[in-house]
Length: 416
Ligand code: GLV
Ligand code: MN
Ligand code: MN
Picture 1 (cartoon, rainbow, N blue to C red):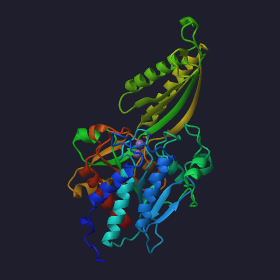
Picture 2: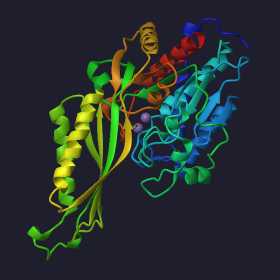
Picture 3: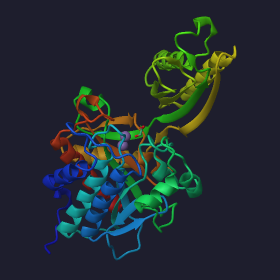
């Protein structure tokens, strides 16, 4: 095989990347849209996993599957050196797009195929992985697989987590055949770099095609359960009601106003709200909702959490309803390795694009790897800033550009 000597000139095959994105997106495709529904550890996730693993094996990579279903594929290499690892996730939210997570995994595969095809010899191997349940919408917390991979939660604890549908992580892994033999926590990579769509509007608004991601904001997820008294909607006088729906509505408004009052970059979302028994002529017995609070500044995030707790205490004070809370996820803000961020920005410059240095609003597997090795991320724009929505879209030229930045960054990290 002819060896490529001009590593700086090496580029990915964009058609191959786009083909793989399309093929994976056909699994769990949401009819009439470009989007996908492959919640973690469902049959859709299994089929997606099987496809990506078959591509990894076709390339001759050494594929390992660990006890939480994290999959890592390493280039064969004469040294036992730790690899430069890239990757992301292939699970989606129930109403997801085709790029969130999937791009990072398939671009990683494309980078490795490019390097193998060129016959490039590197001082250390490259590797690509996908990590279980990044989304967290079925099993909280989010980034569960990468969290356990880096030793941030015990494997046994993760295997016992119950999902929103009552399913258990360990049982679902067994059911889909992805409880593997590799150890978890897993081997520490030399470095980790992840390509992802921005999922927000900033790059587009700033007119940039690349982000060099400096860190990830802190995330706080709380489940709130409000218990009242179920009763007849026609016969129960308003003054005699114990209606948890009314309390839930107050919390929705409070969270929105709280984020506005604390100001940018604080955000607050009630994304899940469930009334039981959820009937037109019945005062609800119970309301369950989730509060998602995020900020790059942990002190302000803690202030938001304190204010929410105080508000819930006030709501429960007169005994009309009972309120219980449960923490679903709490991750502090993360700063990425400045050297890797600079490397990404440098590669972007060489490819003729000034990257925007920016924090990530979304959670990512890279924020877990930042605990154990030099880590950073590359962002490409999301059209209209839309994500976690089947309408999520990124221009093909930006997907290719992001994959080339990933390629060149990985080559440099492998040489470092
Ligand atoms: C996970 O992707 C999150 O940011 O919610
Ligand atoms: Mn993602
Ligand atoms: Mn996501």
